[in-house]
Amino acid sequence: MRIAVCPGSFDPVTNGHLDIVTRASRLFDKVIVAVSVNAEKKAGFTLEERVELVRRCTARLPNLEVDVMDILLADYVRQRGACAIVKGLRAVSDFEYEFQMAMANKKLYKEAETLFLTTSHQNMYLSSSLVKQIAGFGGDISGFVPPEIVDTVMDKFYRAYL
Image 1 (tube, one colour):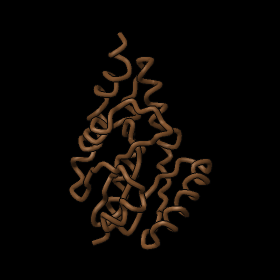
Image 2 (cartoon, one colour):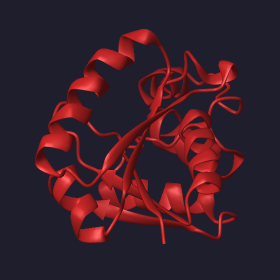
Image 3 (tube, helix red, strand yellow):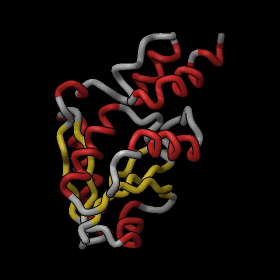
Image 4 (cartoon, helix red, strand yellow):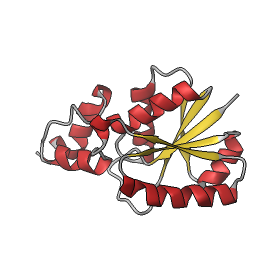
């Protein structure tokens, strides 16, 4: 069985994230969405909330599992028996950082390959930070996040401050 890991903070999950994991699910027998803590980012949702949001948005994908990752990515991939790490790229600016991470992961675990999927053109500008900013001002985020979580994101970032 060919298993891939799609890691990320998913704070919150966006249509761009969903696009990448959906496409990865067509390439691999099993895809694990590994929701992680990013110490460099201030999370808007707890780890448990982010896992639940991803589960809601991916429930229709039978070969996808959502899990928490609280160790090094290379170690997680090894423990889960995965052969690939799938990352999404929005722009050339993402590549330098992601390439560096791919090389480090290869050094730590030679058995895993990193695959880059370019985002669909509709999502090239999209980021979780942008979604939080728009939601914080009460903007319409329905084109940026899956419909299953629009109200939850708005409740967290806008309605909570009314």
